[in-house]
Length: 236
Image: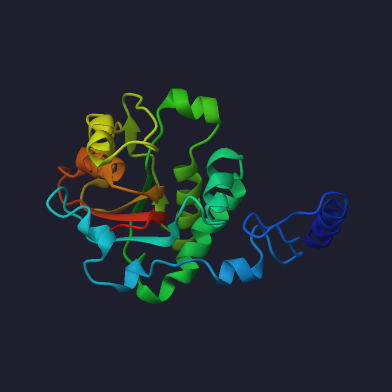
Protein backbone atom coordinates (compact mmCIF):
# COMPACT_ATOMS: atom_id res chain seq x y z
CA UNK A 1 0.00 0.00 0.00
CA UNK A 2 2.79 2.39 0.96
CA UNK A 3 4.70 1.64 -2.25
CA UNK A 4 1.54 2.24 -4.27
CA UNK A 5 1.05 5.63 -2.62
CA UNK A 6 4.69 6.53 -3.29
CA UNK A 7 4.25 5.53 -6.94
CA UNK A 8 1.14 7.71 -7.28
CA UNK A 9 2.87 10.69 -5.64
CA UNK A 10 5.94 10.27 -7.88
CA UNK A 11 3.77 10.01 -10.99
CA UNK A 12 1.89 13.17 -9.98
CA UNK A 13 5.14 15.06 -9.35
CA UNK A 14 6.54 13.88 -12.68
CA UNK A 15 3.44 15.10 -14.49
CA UNK A 16 3.75 18.56 -12.92
CA UNK A 17 7.53 18.86 -13.24
CA UNK A 18 9.01 16.01 -15.32
CA UNK A 19 12.38 14.67 -14.20
CA UNK A 20 15.00 14.63 -16.93
CA UNK A 21 18.25 12.79 -17.47
CA UNK A 22 21.18 15.14 -16.69
CA UNK A 23 23.19 13.66 -19.56
CA UNK A 24 20.74 13.79 -22.50
CA UNK A 25 17.83 15.79 -21.02
CA UNK A 26 15.33 13.09 -21.98
CA UNK A 27 12.29 12.79 -19.69
CA UNK A 28 12.88 9.92 -17.26
CA UNK A 29 10.51 7.00 -16.90
CA UNK A 30 9.12 5.85 -13.57
CA UNK A 31 11.76 3.10 -13.42
CA UNK A 32 14.65 5.48 -14.18
CA UNK A 33 15.58 7.15 -10.87
CA UNK A 34 18.30 9.56 -12.04
CA UNK A 35 19.71 8.58 -15.45
CA UNK A 36 17.90 7.28 -18.49
CA UNK A 37 18.58 3.65 -19.36
CA UNK A 38 20.49 4.53 -22.51
CA UNK A 39 22.91 6.92 -20.79
CA UNK A 40 23.39 4.50 -17.93
CA UNK A 41 24.27 1.75 -20.39
CA UNK A 42 26.68 3.96 -22.34
CA UNK A 43 28.72 5.38 -19.47
CA UNK A 44 32.36 5.79 -20.61
CA UNK A 45 33.60 3.07 -18.26
CA UNK A 46 37.27 2.92 -17.27
CA UNK A 47 37.43 -0.87 -16.71
CA UNK A 48 40.38 -0.13 -14.41
CA UNK A 49 39.20 -2.86 -12.03
CA UNK A 50 39.98 -5.43 -14.72
CA UNK A 51 43.52 -4.21 -15.49
CA UNK A 52 46.60 -5.20 -13.52
CA UNK A 53 48.58 -2.17 -12.25
CA UNK A 54 46.15 0.11 -14.07
CA UNK A 55 46.82 3.76 -14.82
CA UNK A 56 45.09 4.89 -11.65
CA UNK A 57 47.15 2.54 -9.47
CA UNK A 58 50.30 3.91 -11.09
CA UNK A 59 49.56 7.33 -9.57
CA UNK A 60 50.21 5.88 -6.11
CA UNK A 61 53.33 3.86 -6.90
CA UNK A 62 56.22 4.91 -4.69
CA UNK A 63 54.05 7.39 -2.78
CA UNK A 64 51.76 5.29 -0.62
CA UNK A 65 51.17 1.52 -0.50
CA UNK A 66 47.74 0.49 -1.80
CA UNK A 67 46.04 -2.82 -2.55
CA UNK A 68 44.02 -1.68 -5.60
CA UNK A 69 42.43 1.38 -7.17
CA UNK A 70 39.66 1.97 -9.69
CA UNK A 71 37.08 4.45 -10.93
CA UNK A 72 33.73 3.67 -12.53
CA UNK A 73 33.80 6.00 -15.53
CA UNK A 74 35.89 8.71 -17.18
CA UNK A 75 35.34 12.38 -16.42
CA UNK A 76 35.85 14.92 -19.18
CA UNK A 77 34.75 18.51 -18.75
CA UNK A 78 33.24 18.80 -22.24
CA UNK A 79 31.44 15.46 -22.03
CA UNK A 80 27.70 15.43 -21.29
CA UNK A 81 28.45 12.78 -18.65
CA UNK A 82 30.22 15.46 -16.59
CA UNK A 83 26.71 16.62 -15.62
CA UNK A 84 26.48 13.61 -13.29
CA UNK A 85 29.36 14.86 -11.14
CA UNK A 86 28.18 18.48 -11.44
CA UNK A 87 24.71 17.56 -10.15
CA UNK A 88 26.07 15.51 -7.25
CA UNK A 89 28.71 18.07 -6.31
CA UNK A 90 26.95 21.40 -6.78
CA UNK A 91 23.20 20.87 -7.22
CA UNK A 92 22.41 19.09 -3.95
CA UNK A 93 21.64 15.81 -5.74
CA UNK A 94 22.75 13.76 -2.74
CA UNK A 95 20.30 10.92 -3.43
CA UNK A 96 21.83 10.60 -6.88
CA UNK A 97 25.28 10.32 -5.29
CA UNK A 98 24.12 7.49 -3.03
CA UNK A 99 22.45 5.77 -5.99
CA UNK A 100 25.58 6.06 -8.15
CA UNK A 101 27.66 4.56 -5.34
CA UNK A 102 25.34 1.54 -5.19
CA UNK A 103 25.27 1.28 -8.98
CA UNK A 104 29.08 1.26 -9.14
CA UNK A 105 29.20 -1.74 -6.82
CA UNK A 106 26.66 -3.57 -8.99
CA UNK A 107 28.49 -2.76 -12.22
CA UNK A 108 31.89 -3.83 -10.86
CA UNK A 109 30.63 -6.92 -9.03
CA UNK A 110 32.22 -9.48 -11.37
CA UNK A 111 35.68 -8.03 -10.78
CA UNK A 112 35.41 -8.62 -7.00
CA UNK A 113 36.93 -5.15 -6.56
CA UNK A 114 34.86 -4.41 -3.44
CA UNK A 115 35.31 -7.86 -1.87
CA UNK A 116 37.01 -7.90 1.51
CA UNK A 117 36.53 -4.20 2.24
CA UNK A 118 35.94 -3.65 5.96
CA UNK A 119 35.57 0.12 6.19
CA UNK A 120 34.60 2.81 3.69
CA UNK A 121 36.21 6.22 4.33
CA UNK A 122 35.17 9.28 2.30
CA UNK A 123 37.71 11.97 1.48
CA UNK A 124 36.83 14.67 4.02
CA UNK A 125 35.87 18.25 3.37
CA UNK A 126 36.96 21.04 5.70
CA UNK A 127 34.07 21.89 8.08
CA UNK A 128 33.84 25.48 6.81
CA UNK A 129 33.49 24.34 3.19
CA UNK A 130 31.06 21.58 4.08
CA UNK A 131 28.91 24.04 6.03
CA UNK A 132 28.89 26.33 3.01
CA UNK A 133 27.93 23.57 0.56
CA UNK A 134 25.69 21.70 2.99
CA UNK A 135 27.16 18.25 2.36
CA UNK A 136 30.26 16.37 1.22
CA UNK A 137 29.78 14.69 -2.16
CA UNK A 138 32.40 12.02 -1.35
CA UNK A 139 30.40 11.08 1.74
CA UNK A 140 27.15 10.50 -0.15
CA UNK A 141 28.91 8.32 -2.76
CA UNK A 142 30.53 6.41 0.13
CA UNK A 143 27.09 5.92 1.67
CA UNK A 144 25.96 4.13 -1.46
CA UNK A 145 29.07 1.94 -1.59
CA UNK A 146 28.78 1.05 2.11
CA UNK A 147 25.09 0.21 1.74
CA UNK A 148 25.73 -2.06 -1.26
CA UNK A 149 28.77 -3.84 0.20
CA UNK A 150 27.86 -4.06 3.87
CA UNK A 151 31.09 -2.28 4.83
CA UNK A 152 31.14 0.16 7.72
CA UNK A 153 31.09 3.86 6.82
CA UNK A 154 33.47 5.92 8.96
CA UNK A 155 34.69 9.50 8.72
CA UNK A 156 38.11 8.30 9.85
CA UNK A 157 40.09 11.10 8.16
CA UNK A 158 39.56 14.77 8.92
CA UNK A 159 40.58 17.94 7.09
CA UNK A 160 42.60 19.94 9.60
CA UNK A 161 43.04 22.97 7.38
CA UNK A 162 41.20 24.37 4.37
CA UNK A 163 42.75 24.35 0.92
CA UNK A 164 42.00 26.16 -2.31
CA UNK A 165 40.08 24.49 -5.11
CA UNK A 166 42.22 22.06 -7.09
CA UNK A 167 40.41 22.62 -10.41
CA UNK A 168 42.93 24.88 -12.16
CA UNK A 169 46.11 23.67 -10.49
CA UNK A 170 48.87 21.52 -11.97
CA UNK A 171 50.19 18.37 -10.34
CA UNK A 172 52.88 20.06 -8.21
CA UNK A 173 50.57 22.83 -7.04
CA UNK A 174 47.90 20.25 -6.16
CA UNK A 175 50.45 18.43 -4.02
CA UNK A 176 51.46 21.67 -2.25
CA UNK A 177 47.79 22.55 -1.78
CA UNK A 178 46.98 19.29 0.02
CA UNK A 179 50.20 18.83 2.01
CA UNK A 180 49.49 18.49 5.77
CA UNK A 181 45.78 19.01 5.10
CA UNK A 182 44.52 15.68 6.48
CA UNK A 183 44.89 13.76 9.74
CA UNK A 184 43.41 10.65 11.35
CA UNK A 185 40.16 11.30 13.19
CA UNK A 186 40.01 10.59 16.94
CA UNK A 187 39.98 6.82 17.56
CA UNK A 188 40.99 6.12 13.94
CA UNK A 189 44.06 4.16 15.05
CA UNK A 190 41.86 1.73 16.97
CA UNK A 191 39.09 1.60 14.37
CA UNK A 192 41.32 1.09 11.32
CA UNK A 193 44.05 -1.15 12.70
CA UNK A 194 44.29 -4.45 10.77
CA UNK A 195 41.35 -3.46 8.52
CA UNK A 196 41.01 -3.12 4.75
CA UNK A 197 40.03 0.51 4.11
CA UNK A 198 38.47 1.89 0.94
CA UNK A 199 39.05 5.64 0.50
CA UNK A 200 36.34 7.18 -1.69
CA UNK A 201 36.11 10.43 -3.66
CA UNK A 202 34.04 11.76 -6.55
CA UNK A 203 36.85 12.27 -9.08
CA UNK A 204 40.59 11.69 -9.35
CA UNK A 205 42.93 13.78 -11.49
CA UNK A 206 46.54 13.76 -10.28
CA UNK A 207 45.76 11.78 -7.13
CA UNK A 208 47.21 14.47 -4.82
CA UNK A 209 44.19 14.66 -2.53
CA UNK A 210 43.79 10.92 -2.09
CA UNK A 211 47.55 10.40 -1.66
CA UNK A 212 47.48 12.95 1.17
CA UNK A 213 44.51 11.16 2.76
CA UNK A 214 46.15 7.75 2.46
CA UNK A 215 49.42 9.04 3.91
CA UNK A 216 47.51 10.34 6.94
CA UNK A 217 46.50 6.81 7.94
CA UNK A 218 49.09 4.57 6.25
CA UNK A 219 51.16 4.23 9.45
CA UNK A 220 48.30 2.53 11.35
CA UNK A 221 49.30 -1.07 12.21
CA UNK A 222 48.09 -3.75 9.82
CA UNK A 223 46.07 -1.36 7.68
CA UNK A 224 45.39 -2.12 4.01
CA UNK A 225 44.24 0.71 1.74
CA UNK A 226 42.34 0.64 -1.54
CA UNK A 227 40.96 3.55 -3.55
CA UNK A 228 37.67 4.09 -5.37
CA UNK A 229 36.47 7.21 -7.15
CA UNK A 230 33.23 7.52 -9.06
CA UNK A 231 35.07 9.13 -11.98
CA UNK A 232 38.62 9.62 -13.22
CA UNK A 233 40.10 12.23 -15.51
CA UNK A 234 41.67 10.54 -18.52
CA UNK A 235 45.16 9.87 -17.20
CA UNK A 236 48.08 10.12 -19.63
